[in-house]
Length: 338
Image (cartoon, rainbow, N blue to C red; front, side, top):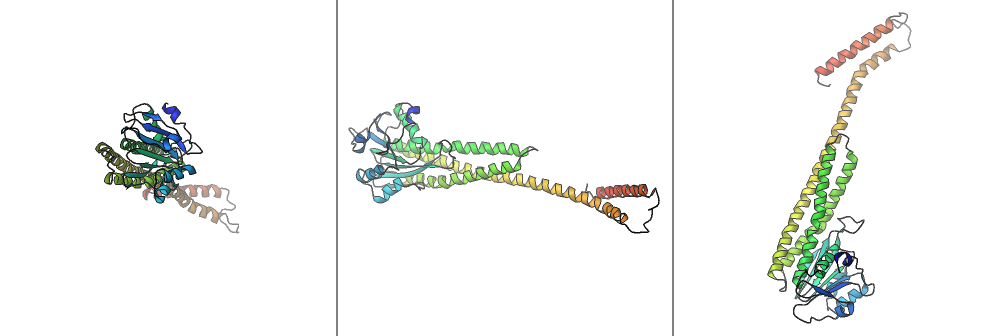
């Protein structure tokens, strides 16, 4: 089965099974149906069962309780909808909750999708409510004969790919900020539209950090309390994933700061343009205020006004007003108002 076909797998509405694979310990696997998977026992030391389930199906909760004999708290954690990334060891098993970028059509990247993982030395159970790309990418490697070989390898690969896919959204945001900086430098830039995009980017950054920060703590907890079936290579790879996630968190902080700086710069430019407009209006008002006063004074309808019967009085008044206007311009230039 190729990657395109496995990515289209839908959960069984009765059992919640999306897919099941029995890893052969050499990078490949063979498929298994629910009847075989639910009561599975390894036929040799190399085999590992991987179940990918839809946790919204009631049968999944019953199976976790009856077949895996998990505590009520653990079952509730593995099937809960509101999940925060965390990890803990329960005896020889590892329980992990991760958040991955939502690449489903029409979804926002910051609307991250949860994936719960329960694993021991021979079984790995992954659970989801909404479709997450990471399990299908790993499944494609397994079906191609180049996938994980052990339970530790599988958990490590799931963690690595979940974190690695975050870089795409972070890079896209940084590229978008660079584009907005260029757009903001243009004279005809739409400041309101740019500010709306910046606000969206800042919200995206906050949403990503909301889950990535506890996810970083969860991976640290895996490293501190790793079960014995996680090999030294697995632990080293998880440490590298932790470092990568830390860099992503730093990149998000830089993106947020860049967005804030760009937002402040655009607001400052808009304020400067508004101040310049108000300044010019004030200068124009200052120029025409005395002219308006003189014309208003001469326009009153009162007897005895000088020049009423003089045909040249109008042109004399116009000349005086032009002279007053020129004198004002001279004074404004000396005061550096113009």
